[in-house]
Image 1 (cartoon, rainbow, N blue to C red):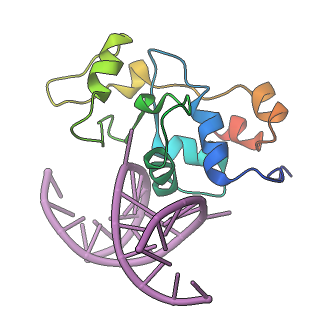
Image 2 (cartoon, chains in turn purple, red, orange; image 1 turned 60 degrees about the vertical axis):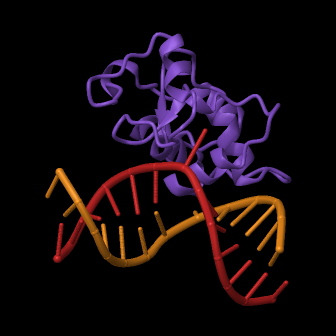
Length: 121
DNA sequence: CTTCTGACGAAAT
DNA sequence: CATTTCGCCAGAA
């Protein structure tokens, strides 16, 4: 079974996964937590909140399970629209259209994540 | 060492 | 639909 590498905190593994989300697609706090394993959606939120300038993580591509933006008063919506993502009249993103499928099995394997996620996704 | 504090989610009520 | 509850974090005070 996959184990965390020495020196890799849960936050660092969360950032690794979020960096895999391509422009024009979004993931959710819960989905990232399921991929990383060993943490929950709340932890992913904490990790995003702990980002510091220069960390190069596409935080704008992480939205909540309802397809809405959780961080009010930011330019998150503008950033996403600039990538081609559309919002409906209720400020929601259609996850069926813009949701990310998640990393492929090879990537999970190469980075020490549980590949069972791939089959349970 | 303890307490507090944040970008969440699913289920039960 | 609105609330409540509780769950594998990290850094600052």
